[in-house]
Image (tube, rainbow, N blue to C red; front, side):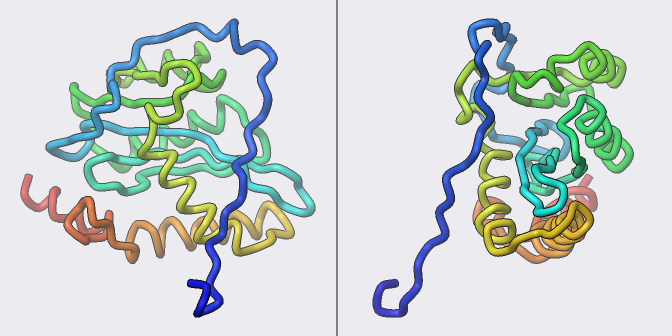
Length: 203
């Protein structure tokens, strides 16, 4: 890399401070870092990440990934990190995927995911909700890995002037590149969309 004048892009991940960490209630971790799957819509993982824009400041990307296909099955981008943002992402996932009785959705202990509104919707859909242990991002390694890849390959390469510009860039990266062009060794060097299509055809 030195000979070719190539350098890796490493930017320290920004996380908001939480002065009330001790008040976070521990909840059941159903996933227990077992990311293995046998079919689609068996294990979903979700999280929120921060993306900066010049005009609109920090904006927030909420994503849901199917661990079997590695596909980002739903995402929402907003100017506020609210329960409505993650509910919108969940609604998009439900509209495009088949919900099974065994489906587990794993998230962190953020207030959006532990809110009454979110848990009521999860229960209504018959989805089992799994949570990180406190202070353990490795419990949700799948979606953490996606967001890290997104930052290195897209976000840190650009400066977004506005919310709208960032949203368009995210659409192009997630829908055109990550889901339909970027291959993954963990799914036999297929793209997430190819993996999902093969599984649907085999069902």
